[in-house]
Length: 338
Image (cartoon, rainbow, N blue to C red; front, side, top):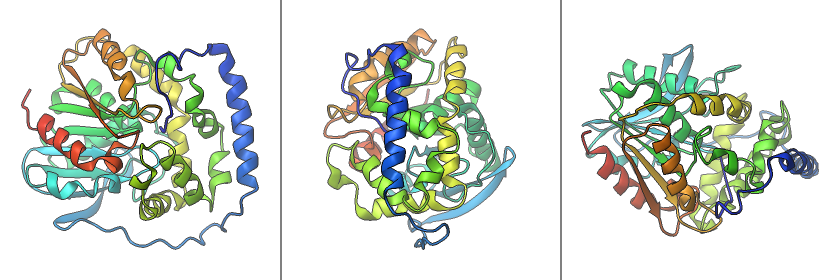
């Protein structure tokens, strides 16, 4: 869900101006991408993903699809969910550390990386059901769930749909569709890609063979220090999205934001699942400055235990930028029994 928002003041653009600037941006991005040579479909050769020592890669049939996951460690269950444009490997560097205290399962969302692309089901509630059924299949008892970006929306949906089956959620640097102050956030020009990604059938065609070009810009423009994203990171993520159907699956997550909004608006009432909101504090790069407003929105929706943490020197991609700080927060919150 990449972003570039500094404050609530920036987010107060008039609602009726959104279609104009989004249409202009979609057209501009399309023209630029058409001018950049791409590779022929199927031409990209990717290296096999490196699985951390002590972990194993597998797939499981759940909720009408197949999810890829990487699991290892012993202890209370911990599920890690990536955002766009990443996959399970966003957590690879911290998984061995977490595995010393937890049973760690990092998931590829439906249609991404090693998970099977589907024609539909990319709304947060359906993907939350994917994760819920995976947890049941693997025998994970009341996991703590961490989600970044769109994965944060999935973690929140899971807490709403199956509160008795999770012991807490951590939402990394993202607001929740349908929960205040979403209406203000979604019209900010810093979220230019919402319109581009949502245009039916467009982005996946323009980006075919150009995944690394796009993701390099997308990732590095939303971190406090562009050097925190390596060329190897970009190549690894590009490979996760260059396989047939993967970029279309990712765009499908943006094309159902109206469904996610309705879900957020309708899911009201007491929620006892502890929620930790974590965001990057870097100005114009992370959602950290907006998290107090998101906290109030969640409390107004019924959240009874909401905490806010910000990470200095980090933008939107907190796991890539500050892995040690994120790991420490996960250890602290995931170890607390509600």
